[in-house]
Image (cartoon, rainbow over all chains, first blue to last red; front, side, top):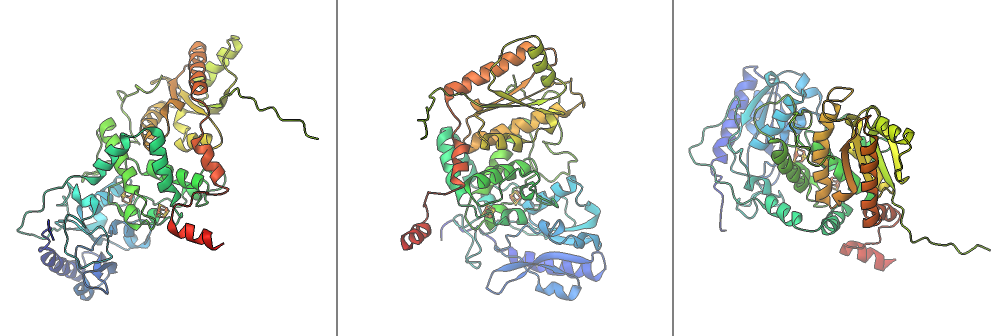
Length: 307
Length: 167
Ligand code: SF4
Ligand code: SF4
């Protein structure tokens, strides 16, 4: 197919992960490694947590390694970070999520051993995991990725080929299209999108930043958001979700990937990221910041919208 | 026998004002004690600080039938809790962009700084918002959603249409 993306180095990367994971586990540097193992179908992977050097040979990395493993260090497996230093395989976007979590005091850098991936992109969908990666089936977030080489990791496999140059952002184009509509047209668009939501909360489960013990949207005293998968509750859920992630979201697009109803969740995230960049010159990156854009302020902040 | 209900065509907008207790509430109080007139369309909800006003309150207000929402507190530097209004300013700067993006007309959402001494400004802000919203007519978007909570009506997917035909 046209516009094939060169991911020939993923084999080397996978081999390097196996060697490094075996080494750090063998030397007792870490107690566990969070990584990908091969799935049942060719090319497919699944997240795995290994605790012995012998298991390291199961590890792999392919274009289907879509999962943001950072989620395993917050709520999904709370006991893991407590068990000692943890090795984790991260793509650039995943690392941004970890960095955000460090900024929010959910993790400490010393607790982690970061294995960074020089990433050329992953598939948008893992339905056909062995398909060659092209500009057509590349995940939209990877098109505009500026974090292909994670910074500040403990180990990054060496590769000798240049990483692909970013393509035109499909999110930016869609945001611009929506911004060009009237409020009523935008409302109609989102109403149709939100109506599809079945409130499975997969988007919340997969997000590394949705680590609250009790989500506002689950509380009923007082109830702020209707819990039913019906139009009013859905709209409120999506607005609240986007707002709670604004200034924190790392842009891993996991929420959008896991949504069974194909709701463009990351479009809201990207829009908020764009606004926060314009308003407060903030962008998710590799540097740990104690304060996010919405937990700090400056006296000179814009207030032209306030009477 | 039920007497014929007269449906009034005069639209009286509902305006919800979220205010901080230290400045704007006192300012509104001053307007009252000074016997200044302002539209009775506004319902005031008092909070300790604008920093306590969660964006979800605004959503809830619209869902419950508000046609316009006002958020008002102390001027920058005057916050009783030192920085609550600075935090609120950032949060609402972001939130209004989000609302705008999902299709809410921002004309219906007003922010203001009204100090305890500014009874006149309170009257001005409230009157202006009320009249603006009156001219715009009722805010239907969220109300329609609330109605659709009862029945979704729209059968946009083939599966739904199929299921409907089989009934
Ligand atoms: S909101 Fe979505 S894109 Fe952002 S960090 Fe969470 S899962 Fe990733
Ligand atoms: S994953 Fe999709 S369908 Fe499920 S709650 Fe999130 S937006 Fe709704």
